[in-house]
Image (cartoon, rainbow, N blue to C red; front, side, top):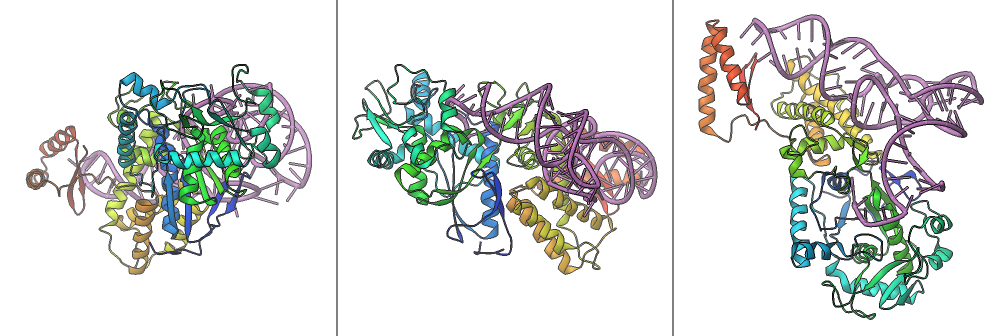
Length: 497
RNA sequence: GGUCUGGUGGCCGAGGGGCUUAGGCACUGGUCUGCAAAACCAGUUACAGCGGUUCGAAUCCGCUCCAGACCUCCA
C-alpha cells in the first residue's frame, strides 16, 4: 500500500491509559509500531484467544489500509509463564513437558504450530515479527541489569525482584489499571512468610532455577529463567524502541501483566513508552468468560465440526469471524448457538451479494450516494474500529446490490466502480472476510455437465407442466445439499459442503 | 471486601441529552414465482427499577436490584 493513502481520515482510538477516545497520532508517521501480547504455547488455543487476535488483526488491517506502515510485533511465550502465583508456581511449558514427557521446545513447537494453523483458518494475518521469549534471553538479562542499575531491582538468592514500592514513589504504579498501591497492599492475597520478596507487590523479573529445572540459562545471578512480564518489555523495546504507538492484548492482561510491563520499561529505559494501550474484551459463554478452568472453552476444530457439548452444529471459520466482528472489540461478546446461526445466515446474505455484485452492469445514474456511503464506511472504522457499525453500513450496500440485480435500482459507470471498490476493500481487506462462494461449478467439469443435464431435463418437465417430476428433482437434490433456484434468467444451482 | 464495566425490542448487537427507521437473525403482510428458494417493499416489539438535573434523558447524576471482569494463571 502507498503511504498516506487516506490522510484525510481522522482515526480515533480509545486509549485505556486515560480512558477516552483520542485522535490517533503516530509518533513517526507513516510508521506505526504495534505490539500485541501473544499466546503462551502450552496448550491449544480456544475461541476466546482467537477473538483477541482477530480484534488486533482488524486494527492492523485498517491501519495498513489507511496507508500506515505498521510494524506489528506479536510474541510467542515459551518460557517464564508460571502456573499460579507470580513467583511460586511451576513454569507452564516445563510442566507440560514433564507431563507429556517431551522436550520443552517440543511442547512450544507443537502448540505454536497449532496456533499458526488456527490463525490461518480464521484469515488472521501474520505479524511482521513474531519473537519468542527463549530467543531473547540475552536481551532480558540486559534489561534486568538495567533495572538493577537504576535501583528498581534487587537480588535475593539468585532471583531478581522488581521493587514496586520504590518505583511507585518515583513514577507511580497502577495508572493503566486504575489501581492504587495502598489498596493493592490491603488486598493482596499472597501469603507472606516464606517469600523472598521485600514486599508482596514486588514481582520476579529473573527466577533462580536449580538443577531440577529443565529450562534454565546462565546469568549474572546464577542459573535461572526470566519472569513472564519481562519478555514483552524486552522484545517490544528491541523491535519497536523505547517509545512506540500501540500496545494491545486481552483485557485480562491489563493487570498485572501490562502494569508490570510499564514499570519495567520505565524502570529500565525512559519515562515515555507506549502512546496507546488497547485491550480486547473477553468472549463469554452464558455470560461467563471462556476459559479452560471453567470447562466452557472449545477449540476452533470443535467449533468447525460441531463436536462439543455446547454446540448444536458446526460453523465455518468465516461465519465465526463475521460473528465476532458484529460486536465491538472492547465489549464482551456472548457466544450462543442462536447468535452463531443468525450470523451464519447474515454472512450468507453478504456472501451471496458479493458474488452477485460481480455480474452487475452499469445503467442510469441512481439515487444512491456512493461517495457519502463510502465515507460512512471510513467513519465507522475511524470511530475506534467500530466493525459492527461498518457491517451495518455494508449491509446498505448489500441492499443496493440486490436492488440493482432485481432491477429496482441502478448505478452509472462511475458509481458502480466506486461502489464495487468500496465493498471489496472493506469486506475483503479491512474485515478480512473471505467470501464463501457457494460452489457453483468451476472446479468440477464433470459435475457441471451432469448438473446442466439435470437442469435441462427439469426444464423440459416444467415446460410440460409436469410439476411432480420438477419438484422431485429439486427436493431430492436438496437432500444432498444442492439448492435449485429458478430465476427469470434461468435456473442456477449451488452446493453447500 | 477493593477496583472497574455492563444491564437496549423474541435473540445477537450498535448508539449514547432532542431527528440513528442502527444492522443481522426471527416474525407478520405484500410483490415476483406453477409451487418453492432467493430477492424486493411494508410492518411489529426497546432502552433493568426508582428518584433527580434539564425545555427535553435510553443517553447525565444519585440510589436500588442484577450480571460480569480484574485483584492468583488465563487472550
